[in-house]
Length: 100
Image (cartoon, rainbow, N blue to C red; front, side, top):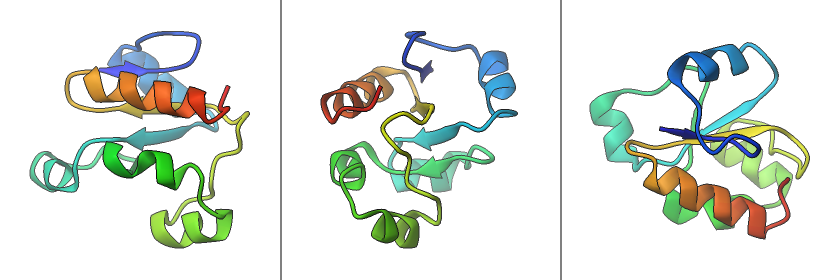
């Protein structure tokens, strides 16, 4: 299940189409889940428990840790998890930190 700002959820095809644009896809599953079930291409894994801290990091530190440019508060970001519960929480966290 996927979450995006204006759209509470996205289909797999919508996500694939979005990923052709300049969008940051954050997978909030645990690392063991990504290891066991596979990484989604062109996504970065930030487990939900790390997300609030990650989104407040110094951009240089974020890039070192996640090998990806830190999103600005206006950049389009998509969160995904396994069933949709964690990605909705992630969306709430991001919104509370001022991400649009």
